[in-house]
Length: 278
Image (cartoon, rainbow, N blue to C red; front, top):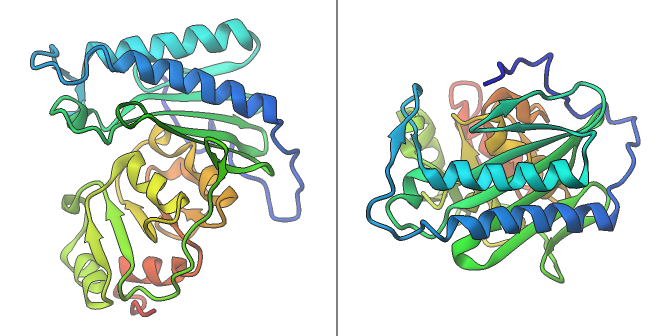
C-alpha cells in the first residue's frame, strides 16, 4: 500500500481561490460507481462465515471489501482511464496534480461482519484544488448521499442541509468509538449537554449532512474514511475540519458539524485550552 504523507495528498487551496465546480454528470457517475460497489457487498452481508482476516493494523477485512474495491476500480478505469486511484485494500497513488479517486469499499467493516446495517461504501474524487466529489452509499439501507463542489448535497432528488441548532445542549454528537476519547474530552461534551451516540463511521457524517445530528467526531481514522466528507458537509452547509480546526482531511482525524457548533465542539475536544459552551 502506498505511504501517505501530507506532501502526497492534495488539500483545498486558500479561501481566495475559486476552484471549478463539479458537473452534474460527474457527480452522477460517482454515485453510480459507489452504488454498484456497495450493492456487491450485499452478497456477503448477513452471512455468518465471512472468512474474516486481520490486517497488520488490527482491523478486519473480508472478501466483500476486496470485491467491492475491485468493482469500483474497474468502473473508474473504464470511464476515466487517465485518473489515478487510491483504495484502502489495494493502495495506489494519489496525485498532487490531476485527479485521484479514493475508495473505501466498506467503511465500518467491524459492524458489517456483525450484521450491522450502518456500514457504507465511500468514494471521493479529489483534484489539485481538494475534494471535488464525495459519495456515501449505505447499501443495506438503500440510501446514497452525493455532493459535488459548488453543486450541493443530494439524497436522491432531495437537497440536504445541516440542522440549525445553535447550542451543544441537546445536540446529537456522534463518534465511531468512545475508546478514542480521553476522559476530559468526553466529560466536556457531556457537561455541555451533548447527547453522545455511537452512530459513527460514515453514517455519523451522513446524519450531520442530512440534518439529523449536529456533529460527528473521528479522533482516529484514515484518509479514505474522510476524503468524501469535506465536500459533502460543506455543500450541506456545515463545516469539516481536523481536530485542530484546519480544513484538511489528510490528518487522519476529523470533525464535522452543522457549522454553528463547530467552535464549541473543537473547544470540547481541547478542554484545557477552552471550555465548551453553546
